Every structure is written in C-alpha cells, then in structure tokens.
Amino acid sequence: MTEYRDPVTGYMIRRYADGPERNAKLYFTSENFSTDDRYFFFNKEQVPGSDNGGTYRCDWKSGEMTRIADASCRGFALDRFRNVAYVCRNETEVYEVNLDSGEMTKRGNLPAGGTVTGHLTATKSGRIACSYHLASKIYALVVLDPGETEAKVVYRSDYRLGHAQICPTDDNLIFYIHETEGDAFQRTWMCDVDEGYVRPYYVEHPNEWITHEVWSADGQEMALMKLDPGRVVDGSRGEIHEGCIIIGDKDGRHFDVEARSPQLLHPCISRDRKWLCADRISYLGVRMQEGVVLMERATGKQKYIASTGSCKTGADHLHPSFNRSGSQILFSNPNEQGIAQVCVIDLEQVMQDW
Image 1 (cartoon, rainbow, N blue to C red):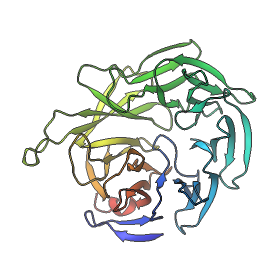
Image 2 (cartoon, rainbow, N blue to C red; image 1 turned 180 degrees about the vertical axis):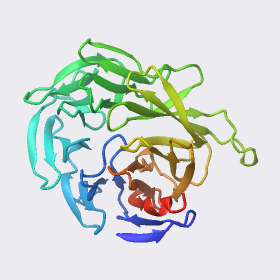
Image 3 (spheres, rainbow, N blue to C red; image 1 turned 45 degrees about the vertical axis):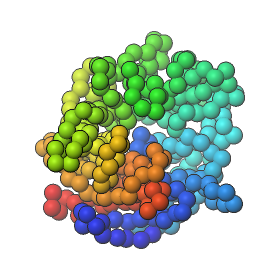
C-alpha cells in the first residue's frame, strides 16, 4: 500500500497494488465493502506461472490482504445487507462466503453444463439470481431460493443476456440487458418472475445510447448512463461526448436527468441516495484525462476528485463505487501500462472544500 497526492486534484489517495497483473475492484453493480467498511474486495488477475490469482479481502487501513476465493471461482459478489458474498465454484456450484472467516458453504447448483454471464446477485430474503448461458447455448435468467438445492430457469432468450441484477428488496424483479458490447436498439429490460413476462425498463428512442445500470442499495431507484455522442460540450477541444446520469424509479415509469458531464460512463449511487459518482473515460475516439467525478444530488454540484491513467481494456475501467457509509470511493486506477490497480479516496478531505 502506498499513498500519493493526486497530481491534478491535490487529494491524497491510497493505492493497494501496482501490478504487473490486473488488481481491479469488484464491478460497481456489487457492494465492494464489508458491512463494517473495514474491508474492501478486489480481483487479482491470474498470470502464467502464478497461482495467486483470485478475489482478495483487503483491510483499507493496514493494506493487509487475504485471498477469499481462488482464480477458478466465478461471479463473486457481495450481499447488500449481510456480511457474506456469493461465488460459483466448478462453474455451476453456488457457495455463500463468510466475509470474516472466508468459510464457504454450498447453497446449491446452477443448471448443469452452463456458465454465468456476470456476477451473482441476491435479495434481502436470500434469493440469488444471475444471467446464464445454458448448455444448450440459450441464454437465461436463473434463480436459486433459500432452502432449495437446484436453481430454476425463470426466463429464456436467444439474445445474449448480461448485467442481471435482482432488485435488492424485491424477489420478483430481475433487471437485465441485451448485451451487444456497444449500442443496442433496446438494452434495458425487467423480468417479472411471478408473472413470467419481460418488458423494457427504459424505453429507448432513436439515437439514444443507454448503458451501465445499477440498483440503489434499497432497490427503490436505478441509475443509468445515457450517452450523447453528438453533443459538443467544449468547442475549444472539439467534439466531447456528454454523459448524463438518469435516475429511474423501481418500475421504470419515471426518469430524471440528475447530472451531466463530459465522457461519463459508469454511475453509482451512495446507500443514502444523496450522492452519485462516475468515471470519466476516453471512448468513441475522444481522448481526455480520465478520472472520478463526485456529484451531489440535492444541489447538482459536481467535482472532479481523482485523476487516473488511461484504461487498456474494459476490465481496466475505473468502475467507482462508494463504501457503505459513503465516506470513501473505491476505484481502479490504470498504471502506465493501462492495467487497473485498486485505489481508495477518503471523501472527508473533499468535503472540507466542497
């Protein structure tokens, strides 16, 4: 662990790894901290000749690290409410992980011969859900209920399904996307498990580009990014694409634009829903200084708080997210080679001059 002063913003930042392998925070659609905010979790890349890859727990104060799951595990993600995580072993076996001890307890099995297409998600009641690629090569949404040992398929599709996130407080709603690795005619969808039907969540219009969605921790809202590739926001620098963070209600009936800023990509909501953060990324042919932006919902004020290196791949994106108390932001900072290295910025210093 090292501390450095950000050369652009002047804030102090802690960096916990320096490669050469990828050391990337968990995806922003999962919790990243233990319930007491003592530990955060990150993924270390498995490189040839090494056996130290996998998911690690890190004490943010001391930098002490413990491997929680090895590189053979997939879909690791934290529970929103309990101090546990969920992971797939041997592709289809679902385990619950005690985040204090690292002990794994088997919960059940996903359909044989398939594989997850994202991380596992869970509700307050303990229902686990994910998007899945069946052995038949059909895509599906799958749920595993408490007390059950075999998961059930609740929806099938010819489309490539991804980013599935069951509502944290509603067992019946699973958000998912049609994954194109870019724009889509209609990207965002919601599955009603009980009724057995799906519907668009944010209904897209021509020339809209919707991407990177995440539930609030209480399941009442969802943040998503709407890119506007044709909008010029700084004429002196040429065409810079504007990203606006849209907040939708649980049912997808009402949406508000909450923030606008150049080149935004991945939004996240604090647990108290008072703050937003997002990464500023070079994309669609536009190169700029990448970094993390913090936004206050009540006032609309925003501040660039951390600069980073330039991402080599999508896996090296910053993916910023708050800890549970909202006092820190965890993000991946690409090194000189563009490889993600996990960092924390304490927001107390930012609030002093907010």
